[in-house]
Length: 409
Image 1: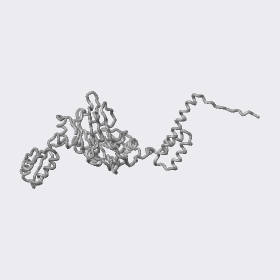
Image 2: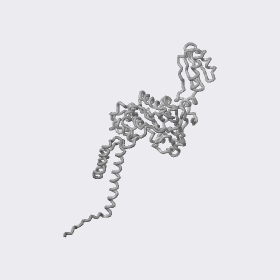
Image 3: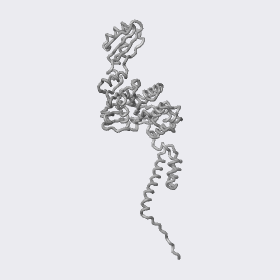
Image 4: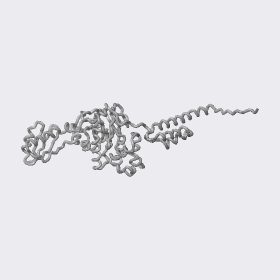
């Protein structure tokens, strides 16, 4: 009987040691693909079963690679976020956050952002000991001369720079914050839709293409979704940056000079859009155009040489640093109306200017707005016009930055 010879293959120990990590890597790749497949939301059961067979039974790592490149449910493999939870707003049809709870109540002014002693020293310049308080749902305008520290403060809030000392407190998570820099940059070959969709995939992977279209429309680029960014003007690029910020449905929106590259019509549209977010989102924006801040900001912070000189409501700033004044024109003789106003306690000065016009200074804006119409009605006079005189943010800003002490409310 012939002997049966046996052939034995013995792998060198060093080769076996090198193969073990490779085998572990291949098994881990298959496990990752199977888990990702199980979490895919848009695949049907039959499709999932077919891909599972490919991953497990096709030679490793070919099956796993086929799934990753051809079958993976890109951008939707993560569980869907819940429609709403405490502290997160729902999303309306116009893309703005809506919140049925406390954020809608005007009296609720919990701070969304607070800082304590926030400092970034660049060697004598920078930001020093800033205690910021940004109420929930407010539009907070940050103003100051060039070099005052506005961009540094915004970057510290956004987390793109580190403070030398001090703290930043947020009521919301970092994932609920969006930032639009003053000069956004995009690859020229991307279309507007692709740029915003890329932002969506990074910050809101559970969202779909409708969120991209809504963000573009809200930013005024709905008709330019298919255009390449390389052909955009600077103003359009700035709008695109805003669309990228809005696509993630942020609770806190940080805008650095959002109107700096826009023409007058575009600036008005941008301001209207930001103003409409009040109560729905918290917005912090910087601007060197004081009229824009006065138009839309209910809260204002004034920086000079890296220090916060004032923060509080725009109306309180004007009341504190200016004497509110109006030019009132009456149909007919204005003397009886002037005499009646001069006897009111809230009127600090009443000066006739011509036969039909009176200049009235009041103790506060509210006192003047309430008192002037009441006196005219009591006198039975007919009012032609009533225009504020010199009670604007620019005048208050100049008064504060030249002579005013640091203060906050």
